[in-house]
Image 1: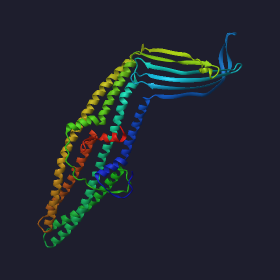
Image 2 (image 1 turned 90 degrees about the vertical axis):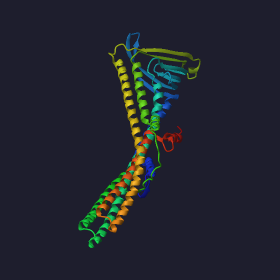
Image 3 (image 1 turned 135 degrees about the vertical axis):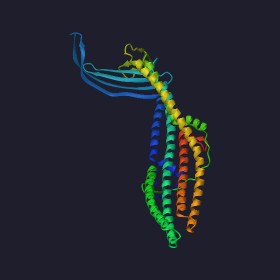
Image 4 (image 1 turned 180 degrees about the horizontal axis):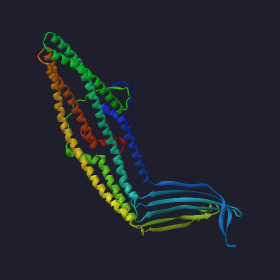
Length: 477
């Protein structure tokens, strides 16, 4: 959804909704999830029986072949012409537990030789059932069954993690624009008030109520206010461009933001945040995946370092005849049993070296994963502490802003009637601006901390439920 060029009024919640739907980051997150979704679908499909048709409709050969002439005791080239056609159906099923493959197939082939003697033959395998298995080798199906569902679960939570990250980014650009708009509004007010105070000061100077230095200070404030307004206008345009670009709006869209109300008090405990992070954060699932993949590599290299044995067995029926009908009449039993061995004799330690490397990589992965988990846990703890502190700071910043506004307005009234000097007025104005900025900063830090906690835990602490619950319900997981 791309909003048309217009003047729009948005609050924080609406900004986050548009970002989650229309931003480029949302598009990237959606496509990355879709890629993982189809990868998991392929994994599930590979677990189901597969039906395969293999056919050679027509194969015609006309060439000279080397043949042995027994009368002359020499090899001679003789012309050969043949027409060949074949088709076969096969159903196979991979077995995760054993790593073997069970199959059932049926084949039919036609061969016609031309030349001095024309000969036609049909050969059929009406039915054959078999099984092939590596007896001591690596079983990739078993590891795929453990890793692939974990990868998809990580992909789901990574998608939700990215969406929460988009909420945090939207919050950042929202408050950047709010700050720029507030600075611009304050600059306009400052221009108006400084001009008014200068005119009042000029009148008071006429009656010798203030000095010329005071009047010049008021004039300097007028010039300073005009310069601040120009700078504030430039900053507002930059913030507006960054805002509409992030939300993928039309470039000439003009937005007016509404400052969010003070949120309800919400206490989040460290223990609960850590528990939810361990359960939901995709980084923890990624750590588990890394360990499993390292263990899989160890298993593979260890089994490749020793001898392997393969087993193949099939039982079916086979017949050859000069007509199609006779090719299926009175077939004889066809039995095939094969056992093969692969035994490394001399490889100069290559297989053993690979196995040792895989073990070392597993140890490194475990250490790296533990360091990563500690880092995530520390980040969660610091963010929760910061969030709980921000609530108190926001309340005090709001109170300070009310007091600063009251004091400034009172000082202006006193200055007009000659009971306050220029220094007092300037000081009160500075404090009012700082108090208003501090309040906006406190609101921004609160919401950034809030969405960071949601991102790291994938848990909605207001509704007391996992963010993935709604996702799983909507898509039937």
